[in-house]
Length: 263
Image (cartoon, rainbow, N blue to C red; front, side, top):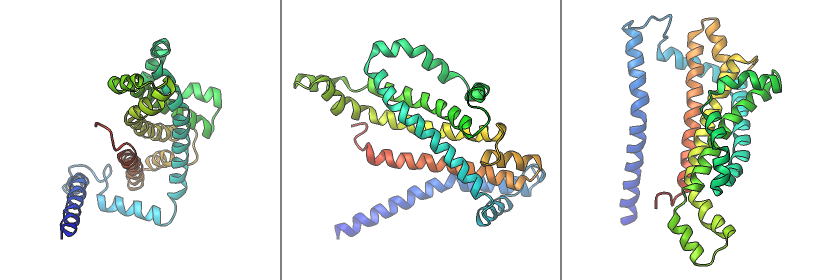
């Protein structure tokens, strides 16, 4: 009996969470529909939501968007992987030593504050016009985010747990492996979640303006130039879905992998 009550409670709780999640998107679509039907915004600038979602569905069904979607996902994940592989160990090294961190703190903060788009000409000079230039500038921007968050997580590990481990005779490596590493994981996941979103943004912008022949950014700018607004908005919606999907994925992984966070 208790199992039935518990299952009923959790199913209702899940339904409520899904309902709350859908309120925002539905409200946006309703406002969009009213703005279009009441001619608050010209049809030439804002097509209706039904037509736009229809265009999105058609593009996915006939496969015309698949190549662009695949190219963007590949570049984003490639850039993110490079950022994570390099950023996590370097962040751990910097966070483990105040002396090393203060030596490079200015450089990290300077480049982290520099807009990624300002780095396009430099990366084009180094890597030329090609896919890797786009991936490299996105990876560099994402790497700085990962580096900063991992270092911050390591530096702000709970001192009481570190002291307790040292009192019990743990070596520096054991303290790092059993305490500092796990204490830094919540902040590391925050950095990874921010990094994948930033990598997507930079890749989309790069596809718009750095000699791309495919990708969602290229698709958006092409649709804008031929004034195919339904396809332009459909492509923008798809990029938003990609970003939201990455965010939900990382939140889910973080929830299960770092279940002790905040305790």
